[in-house]
Image (cartoon, rainbow, N blue to C red; front, top):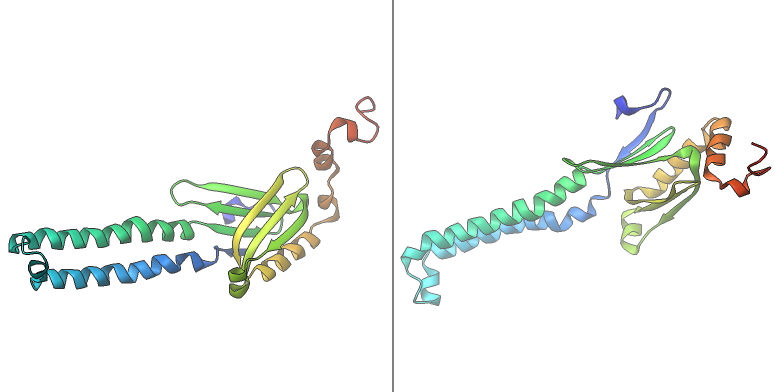
Length: 195
């Protein structure tokens, strides 16, 4: 991020989303190998032959391989993508903008200038309140609305954001060129002819 900073811009906070979305992948990461090991031990002891007489000792290799592949699929197909998605998401607050970066291989960036913000709204579900996280909705003058989901320590992040907005130079908060580009011609003072 340091190479992407504008002259005079400073990084205030860099964070990732609340890690609560990793609870189920973490449980699957622990339970899938445990169940696979239990199933492999059960298969090697010859228990499937007691359950189904059709299953003979020749099936042991294939049943063990199926257990290993099922555990590998859970780890690589379920746990790893969710971990990479969480790890590849960053929320960066600088002295002039908020940057939300998503993705590891394919990157998507959302940037909102602090000078263009007109409203900052924090919303929290019950679980987010318990975990002290929340969603921050940013309404800009001409960029529309942007939501930054699952920000940890959302109240602290909002306070840093509001402090950064207060610390902006007076000329940047209401830059006449930015506001005039955002307004339609008919709403500008003096109309189109006086330009």
